[in-house]
Structures are given as C-alpha cells and as structure tokens.
Length: 350
Image (cartoon, rainbow, N blue to C red; front, top):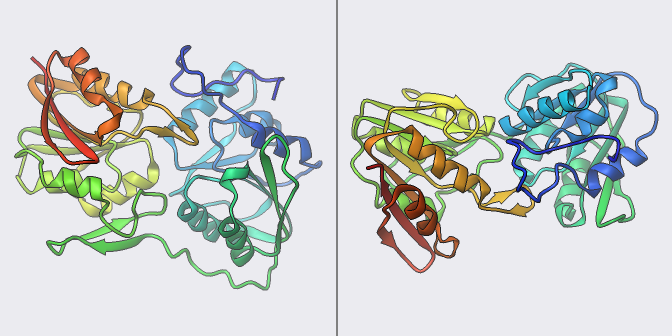
C-alpha cells in the first residue's frame, strides 16, 4: 500500500486512524494475475479499489462515506475511475473475481453473498480478507454454505485470508433479508441486513422512544438506522420528518418503515437545514476503531442545521461524556433521562 496516499472521508488531519490495514495489504500481496469482471465487496475506504483501479473493478458498498473516500483517493493518486454500486443495487450478471473485505456485520455479508452468488461461476476466483478478530467460524461457514468449500490462510500481521472454491451445485437461493419484527404497539419494523439489532428493538432505542419530546415543525432523524425514532416522531404529525444516514441499507429500512418521510443518504446532516428538532443516537465506532469523531461532527452539524430555539436530543452510553461536547457547542445541555447505562441529553440552539 506504500505506493498510494490514502485517507478516510471526510479528511481530518487530526485523525490517527488509517485508510487501510494489514488485511488489505495481505490480499493485494497474494492476489494472483487476474482478468475479467472484478467485484470488490465491502472495501473500507477505497484502498482496494484504488490499488486495483486499472482493472476497472466494480465496488459494492453499503457506505456513502466509503464511496466518497474512494473518489477522493482515486483523484489523489491519479487513478482511473471505478464503477460503484451500493448494496441495494442490482449486482453484475457475471463475476470472474470476487474480493471480499469481511464486513463487521455477518448479516450484511450473508445478504450480499446470496445476492452475488448467481453471478459466480465454477472458475470465479474468490478471496476474502480480514483481521484475525474479524474472521470467525461463522464467517467461514457462511462462505461455504452459500458459495463453496472454504479455507483460511496462516495469519500474517494479525490478518488472515479466506480462499473459497465455487461449487455450482449449491442451490442459489434468495437472500433471507430484509427481516422484520413487531414493536410492543403492534407496528411492524423492517430491517435490511447490516442494521443494528435487526431482530429486535435494542434497549437503547427503547429507552430513547420512552423519552422523546412531542415532535414539531421539521424533524431530522440523524443517523436514522431503521428509522424507528423518526417513525415515532411522525405520529405527532409534524411538518416533515427527514431521515438521514450514510448507510444505504439504513435508508432502505427507514423508507420501508416510514414511506411518507423524506430520505437523504449522506455524511452527518447531509446538508439538511432549517430543522426544529433533531433526534440522534451517534455511533462511536468506525469499523474496528473506537472514536467520537463522528459524534462530534454530528453535534457541530446539528447546531448549524437547527433553527433558533431548535432542539437536539441525543442518547448515548453514560461513559461517553457527550454532555461536555454539547455544552461546549451549544452553551447548554440538560439531562432528560438516565439509567445505569444510557443518558438522554437535550441541547437548545439559543
């Protein structure tokens, strides 16, 4: 990877997290000479797409940020454009080389392997890559069940490769995703693969729903996931509910759950303005890294997006200390509710 200058998106000179890791390097070192239709699944920040751009690969990702990072890294390194698809798009009809950067979500991997399997043929080269902590027995069993016999490499710099031999005799069955569950009030919730707690309402969201304010004016469900918070807000009949997330799977889920909403796929507030109420459960992980960078950006962007006297409601784990950041940004922050694990905070744009 030393030949390329790679960054995450959005670029932050203070960010100490790299745009590649040993798994990316290992895969590129071991990849033989290949030709034909190359598909790269779950590339993290465009490291693989940038390195292999000369092969005109197809990149498939659930992440808007990954797409933007890839575009930036291709331009930065003078590389040719690559074809980009989201995990919601129709995949290529034929795949000769399938490279998989193992995603954090086993459900997302399951969904995508099922969607890609019909395009795989007996001579398709299939290689996966991940850090040792990311590749589990269940990961290998999934490759084997959907595509064919699977083995792993020796570990190298705490990374490991997956080698899968396609077996055309395995029935190509549809993906089991999306799935659904029912809220206590009888509302059916649809979840596409990769959404947090896809089979139930997680305890943090349940706590958040129990303490939401009455929705008014223009509401933004920021980092919406499956859109449950925005869906609950819509019951108050506000002027508009906007759902924003950088995950294409999340936006597809929110759209299924609250079709009357407005949907935006993008970074943070995604340019949405003139908002009266923002509901936010910010992530504190970026792939394998723990960071408050995303939360900090969401809080800053929320202050810009809110109208005067607009409110930001945030839920987070108590130990994350979001109240410090909110007081610094807004000049005020109050605790709406708390329990031993979670705290709900309210900040008002004065």
